[in-house]
Image (cartoon, rainbow, N blue to C red; front, side):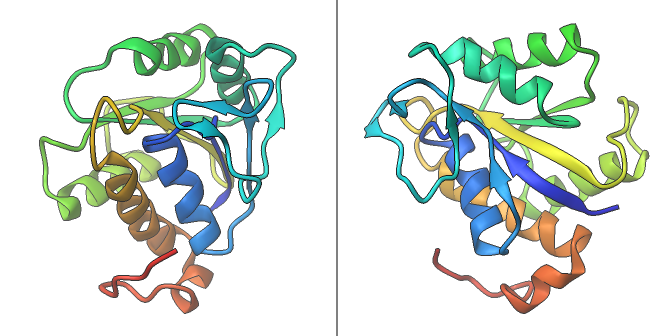
Length: 178
């Protein structure tokens, strides 16, 4: 049951980590970002293939990414708050499978295995569909320093396990730079 595409809003942190993993594994990516490609550190890089919403606000793109994906994975260090909490609320509103991962709580290996079990239906949450478009969301870098690299690493591990063709791009256990 591969992940066919990763979408996100392109914000620093978890959003960018998810897209960086997709780019690294040569997996299609996309999603919605605010008008003007606005992020906390300025303008979102053109390497992220994102569409702009008509609004410069963050919430319209957050909801659009939930709606346009099959399932959502939210990464935080600590509890849900702010935009991450709104992402959870939008997923529930639109009846989309959603999983919150507090990556500060578990090891990388345990986190990857928990996500894989969720995709396999072994976790007591609604299971994502096969061949899904995955929305990767969560805290921005200023709220959780280091989260972008953590999410990228975790998502590369997940993609390698779920999408065997990714192995040629980043063999498991190797540390690669984007």
